[in-house]
Image (cartoon, rainbow, N blue to C red):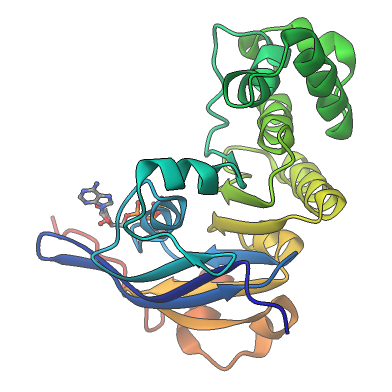
Length: 257
Ligand SMILES: Nc1ncnc2c1ncn2[C@@H]1O[C@H](COP(=O)(O)OP(=O)(O)OP(=O)(O)O)[C@@H](O)[C@H]1O
């Protein structure tokens, strides 16, 4: 068996007295798409930031391609970051740059690619997400939310990363556009042969883009397994979450008036 692309063991992270991650063990195989689900404030973003190296866990190990990444130097971190592509929540496009410049940003800034060549790549990547070359000259503010997400996806794949992170990729989209984006994510990830980690609370998206799903609750991954097993996993917390029921073991913290 090949080693996991990403492997977490005993990862913990607290903010003052608040224990957010309380011992996370997670393996993501090469070419696998892992989706982490969980309610608001359960620590999905904190988990993603720890894997990306934007936040340092209090304890535990995070290995990428078998190499420990917790506590590495900023120079070593740069080398690890080259393997990553990221689709941020809300797209996070630069408003002052044209669409093609947004997509070409990584190749130009990080790889020192000549602008003419980077533009060619940007136009090709826009094509891969179903946008014609004429879109490249527009500014993000001239695009609909769904088109902005496509551009953000084109940007995430521009450097052909080995690992892509998707942070709530369908937030703010109508269900049909969300499905289009989900399909594009599946296609782009499989065309690249990339490993994917996504966080979302959109179950339709999780089912579509994930090979495996892991549910974060109370600082721990309380269930993980293949997507096709989630409907009869026998875990009451998962069951409540995927069906969006107010009643069940997960109690929402609602402030009493
Ligand atoms: N830099 C920080 N300093 C202090 N507390 C933080 C910090 N980052 C996150 N937290 C806390 O950690 C907890 C988990 O936050 P996180 O953003 O990871 O949740 P989430 O599962 O991604 O939620 P959502 O789905 O609403 O985005 C929250 O209680 C949050 O307040």
